[in-house]
Amino acid sequence: MGDTETFIVANADIDQHNHLTRCQMLPRTDYRHTQSMHAISWATGGVLVRKPPDGSYLPLICGGLAKGQVGNDKCYQLDLEGGGLPAEVGVMREMRNGAASIAIVNGTTLWVTGGHFSTAKDTTEWISTPLMVSDGQPTMLQQGPQLPKKMTFHCLERINTKTAILFGGDQWVENVPGLQDTWTINGLDSPDFIRSAGGETASSWTLGPPMKHGRTAHGCGVVLAQGSNTRRKFVVAAGGEDVLYSESTPSFATKKDVELLRVEEDEDGNVIDISDAWEEGPPLATTLAYMASATTEDQSILFLVGGLVSETPLSYYSNYIWSLRCITDVCWWRLEATERLLIARDKAVAMILPPFTTPLSQVTTITPSEGN
Image 1 (cartoon, rainbow, N blue to C red):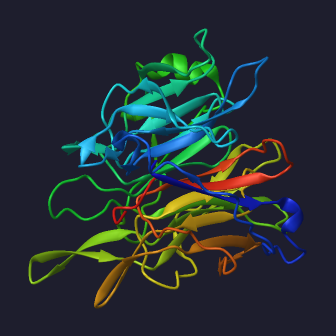
Image 2 (image 1 turned 45 degrees about the vertical axis):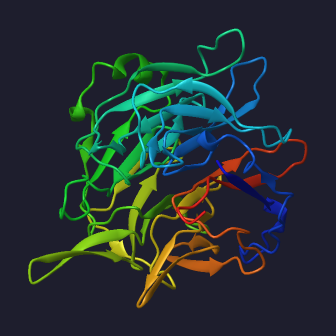
């Protein structure tokens, strides 16, 4: 967690053109004086909701690589409201870095998927709050449903409370290109999904249309198109890396292209149609990989935070924040030019936090980059 930076995003600050007109930097909480195990990259995380009557929020960071490239199987709770040190709250079943996670079952359970430690993984696990111990800490549960393939640096995103989509990633095999595959899985809003998942296999997933290009370590999210007569959403795959071959010699290439997948919902939030093909979206301004992604709760804005820019002849860490919005069939990127990260970083975690003492949502980036 090294260093943490927090920004304000208030719905009242989005004008009629759907532009963010204010992005205020909050006081920065500096964890650099803490133990080295708190300096983590390639981690994953999310915000859970504690069971009633508490109902408070639990920001978690799990896995990753600790200082010195040491694997980490710990989960830490962030104290962003009180400004205290991150507290270790549990141990995962496996060490994972490059994993992807989402909050499911009404925000009570963090589903951590894939990642790698020596080799890529197809295992998943639950970190849950419904079964709380007396001290109010999260409960580590059983293994979750197996992924269709072993993968790391992939994307797992909620289309809605019922359905998730899995796409891209790296199989962590030398010279193998990034994955183009797309899968969906249903039933995320039901506690039965957790209770039955331990016995489920990769057959729980439904194969969807392949992306146009393989990619790994890409930015991702699901954005609701404003002004649409239907509940149209776009699944976003932005930038990332892929393996290219020149006269049989492999090399990694950082990408700037963007792909979109259209999804239609009914009024009850059921997915009624997924496009049979990904389409080209608005490209990024530069090549970008290993950025952090975060989408607002209403899915109106996707943020890409930091990342690795590779432009010949230089590669450097970014401190920019980009946002994507969509209206009907058109999506566009906007540089949040008034605010940047204090520390350029990649392989970080970003999450949208619910309001604490003010009616605002907070966009928080966590963990140092490889360069810090």
